[in-house]
Length: 474
Image (cartoon, rainbow, N blue to C red; front, side, top):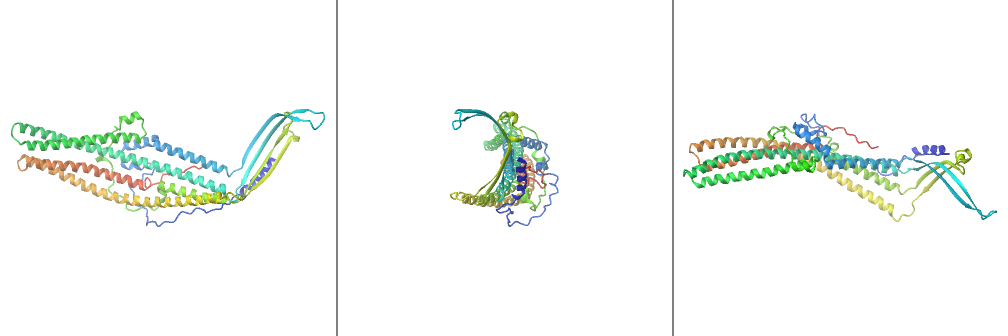
């Protein structure tokens, strides 16, 4: 009877609990001395909102927009759901299969062997419940389930990596746009100054008070500054459309570009002190490392699954139901039937297929191990570079600020000395040209430090505080 089959399956379930093959152990790598870095100024922010350290409401808003509409992130989230479905499917292979079936029909039977000769037509009705279960003595399905769950976690980590890359790219492109805006404004202000100077010297030249050489030198610097304005305006337009694309906006909105107002480059929050130490939990912070470790765990589990295929498989089946020639007698005691069976299958000759599968599984494990080790190496390289860049860009910014102040003062003094006749207009133009370059370089230096903070947050996996986001496997 079916209840006996269920009892047999319940007894068999705990028996099928072992699994052959290597259990996963995290690879031992020679890591640098890592400590808990002092980053109190970053502490309020997590990997989910690390960009809020810049305190720009426009940046906060467009990050939310990118996370909602960016197509790469949407595809990554769909891949997580796909991996979750595969994990559920792998779990189903470890559980009994239950089902019901029914049939009704009419059949014709020959009666030639029994007088009177002829045939007989009769009805039949069937109603069955059935169950089957493969005893996982060697852990084949347990290893496949382990691999599927590890791949799900790896896919979720890959989604987090896409998210981190997206938010970092949005911040970097936003700061680039603000930098080009500042440089365009600086170039336009300088161009306005050149316009005034050129018009004044043009009138003096026409009146015969100055040489054409001075006029043409002023005109050349004016045209060079006008060309700089046009180049920056072009870069500003391209940055706007690129940012609109990254935010997942419609084609119509992309054509319009990006016109939202925000904090000026000079007002953006830049931290003067960057942490100097690598956090002790860097291996668990970075989503790319979590992804590679998940794939490594899955590859390790598939070695066990390939090895388990060499051993016998045992399948238990059973059914219970009713068979009757009359529908009104289908569920009577006399119509009750049942069956149980156990089947054993042992591979004997597969033409080397099983050995090839195990060899392929071990080779894939070696690939995943190499990828994991390389990812860890790259993580520490990026973190080290980001820490150094954070310090050096701050020092470079300070030097650029002093240079810009010095050139502003030099330009003021040169104008006074030229007015009093102590220096020529050529000297003034040279100082003005250097002052313009100093202001442009200062804007670049501000952006470099902002990019260094982005790179540092990205290298740390998004911030100094982990945002809990557990992945539900089933």
